[in-house]
Length: 155
Image (tube, rainbow, N blue to C red):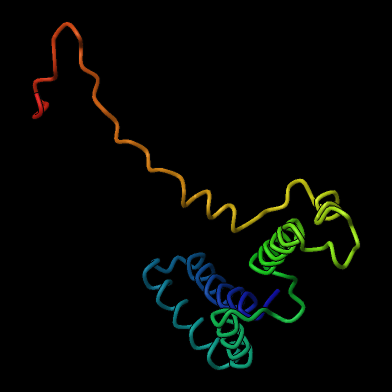
């Protein structure tokens, strides 16, 4: 559990325990709420300064985009690796890319044979999206027996 989560749990416990005790003692809830808030605030400032500082550093690290020590790869790193692998495979499939180094009579055949079927070619996907035509706006059907729609300004 990270320092920010530990600090959250400590602050919640510092509030909930006095609030529950005051509610059991039949103190009105607004007064119990204010007393428990004041106690939690004061106790966290006085007794948990080191934990508060660690939590602040942890939040600052997360805000700047740096990972905690010992954390695994995040989604952006994994996606970058997949896109880089797809671009490398696409470069291997272009004519003449691997013929000189591998000595294959047909350039790129070995790379095409070894390429993954589900490989992503990011540039081709972007080109497909750019070439896609926008959909035509929906039209209102007219009833052949009644003639054109009366609200249509072109009629």
